[in-house]
Length: 166
Image (cartoon, rainbow, N blue to C red; front, side, top):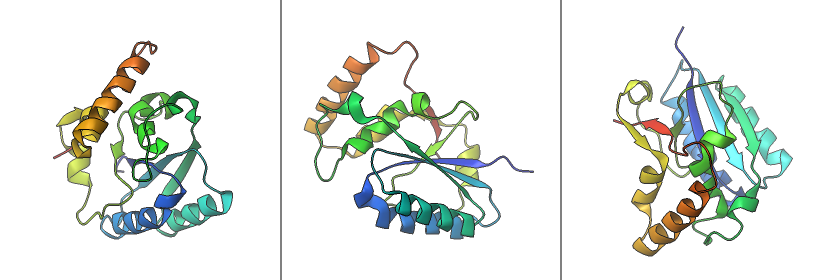
């Protein structure tokens, strides 16, 4: 039996429609895969979580909604395009249970058009902060690096988290 592919998404309520599209594309293009979706969020209504759970169950996948305490990121720079929830992926190793050794972070507004198993098996590892900073402007990167540096000083274990990419 294949090990499940663990997927991490972080979002606010505004990204629910794109998330539904991303999840559907993920499931349709990965038939027969056991997929577990870990969703970090701050404030999403229970009815919406139930709808997502039902979507996942329709494809024999499992949704693990995890409500995160946003107080650590209260003073972090945010915008309508970059809500506080985007920071949650940076501390995923501290917010996710330690029952698996890797997770693949996917933005909720992408399409998955190929099978993920080859990506999952890849030996290439990068850290979440490097991966997340690739799509931000120079000013946003600087603010995030400064905030991460301040947080890192207060964290005993490393917040770097391996992700496999191809």
